[in-house]
Length: 294
Image (cartoon, rainbow, N blue to C red; front, side):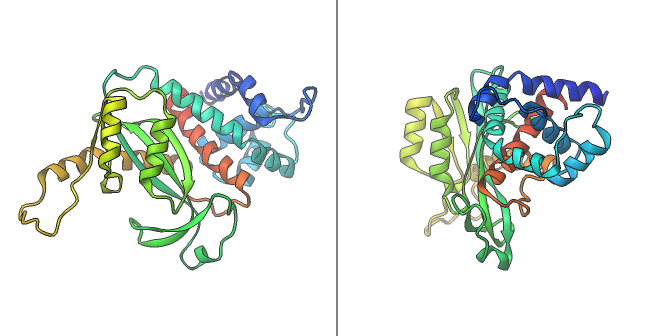
């Protein structure tokens, strides 16, 4: 059974060979390494699906158990260097598979937007971290009540009653970036938005953006109401409670993603390319699980 799933995963990666070759921009069109990019990507995605979350562990697992499948597996250093160079390929795969997931969705949808932290360092260490400083920043994680150094992963998911939400668009930003401008960008970048409703928390309240969503996309933005000083509600705001309950599944999505891939733990990352491979490689691994049950 696992052999069938591994073959399906490899074939799915190979279906995107032309895209992988284009985004990795090899210096010579004649340069075809014995251990191909498609094999390297497959090894990584398969390792994540088997709950091997560190590059070294994935490499050792492949060397000890899958060498008949990948006989040209290089040294660990060469494998690690290749993975870091394949960050654009992981991102392209993730985007392609997101589009595949969104093809058969209904014509009117309930969307949810939110973000989660990807943590390179936390607590006292967050103030001294400098890895991938081109993108990473220090910020405060209010849900965990701690400072961290890293990035945010922003997601738009489709609410499916009784099921795991379906992701349709993802992007990464610095940890200190406010959720609202990131949401505006992710909506602008997602060309397949369908009419419906977009549920979000109070961080996304913006009257101008709400009007733009309704006018340009026929999407109604619904957020909990901000409490005013003169509010005298004793029993609570029923509408806000209702909206909060409907956006709760996005937390289930992030919990599922982290449980499956350990995406939020990035303390072993040592470069920007390594960070992007970590994030989009794990997103791709999760999407492969949804699409191909790998």
